[in-house]
Amino acid sequence: MDTTRQAPDETGAWVVTRPGAVGTAGPGPLLWERRPLAGPGPGEILVEVEACGVCRTDLHLAEGDLAPRTPRCTPGHEVVGLVRAAGSGVEGFAVGDRAGVAWLAHTCGGCAYCRAGRENLCPDSRYTGWDRHGGYAEHVLADARFAYRLPEGPPAEELAPLLCAGIIGYRALERADLPQGGLLGIYGFGASAHLTAQIALARGARVAVFTRGAQARRLALELGAGFAGDSYDPAPEPLDAAILFAPAGELVPVALAALDRGGTLAVAGIHLSDIPTLDYQRHLFQERTLRSVTANTRADGRAYLAEAARTRPAVHVRRYPLRQADTALADLAADRVTGVAVLVAE
Image (cartoon, rainbow, N blue to C red; front, side, top):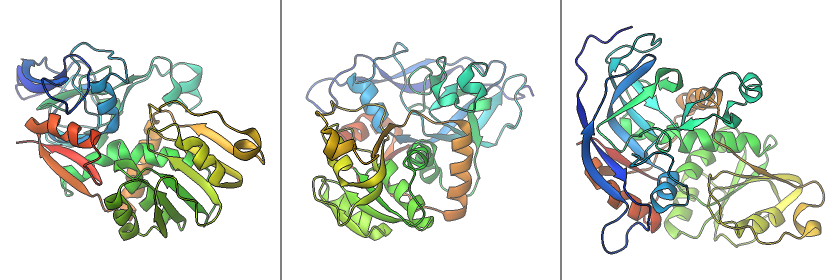
C-alpha cells in the first residue's frame, strides 16, 4: 500500500543531547528541536503521535545508565497515534488507523532465537527510543510489522502505558511461574507494577506489594492487593512468586528470602543497581529461582493486549503536555508519579 497523503517534511521532537542527571539545576539532557522527517520507507508507517507513555527506561537513557545507540536520540516507546502515511509493502494498516509503537522495533527473523519464538533474545534486536527515534515527538516512523493495531474508542493516554508497562509486566508475570491462586509479591509499584497486579488479580492470584511510597501503597490496596508494606517489610506469608520492578539490586536478596520453597523471582527492569552477595542457604536453596526478563516478543504484546481488552485494567495516568517531557522525567526520577506519566499531544 502506498501513501496517498503528503507526509510532513519536519517534526518537533525531544532529543537526548548529552546524558546526565534529570531534574538538577541547569540544562538537562533533553532538548526540544525541530528536525527533518523523511517519509515512510518500504514496510514503514508514519504515525502522528497522540500520546506517549513515560517509562523508567527513558530515564535510564537520559541519565546515561543505558549507553546511547543513536546520536541525539528521541526517547519514548509507548506510542499511540494515527497512521498518516504508509510505505510500499505495508500490510495491516491503512491511513487513519490507530497504531501502537512499542519497545521492540526490529529482529532479524532468521537466527536461532527468532526461529524458536524467542525473538526478544535476537542479537540483532533494535528498540524504539534507543536505536530508532521514539515517541517524545509529534511524529514517529515505525516498522509496520512491529506495530500493533489499537482500538479507536479508549483514550490514547490510557492505551499508551499498555505498550511497555503492560507488556513487560505480562512477560515478567509469565516468567515468575506463579501457581494458580498463589501469592505474588511485587517490589516497587509504579507504571508496570500497577498494571501487572491487575492481571494477576484477574487470574485469581493474591497480591502483596512492597514499596517505599505511601501513595503507591494506597493505590495497591485500592486495586485489590491484600497487603501493602514498605520495601523491606516482611511478607505476610511465604511468597509463591515475586517480581522486582524497582531498579534496586539491594532488594533481590530481600525478595528471594521472602519466597517459599520452589518460588521464582523475576527481575523486570532493563537496568538494575548492583546485587549484594547472596547467601546460598537463605536465598537460593530449596529450589528458589532468580530470573531476568529481557524485553518481549510480539506474541507477548498481542497476548497482553487481548487480555487487557477483556479485563480492562484501571490505568492511573498523570498527564503532561508533550512540551513538558523534561518535567515528566524529573517527576519520575524523584518518585513524584503515582501510576504512570503520559505525554499528550498539544
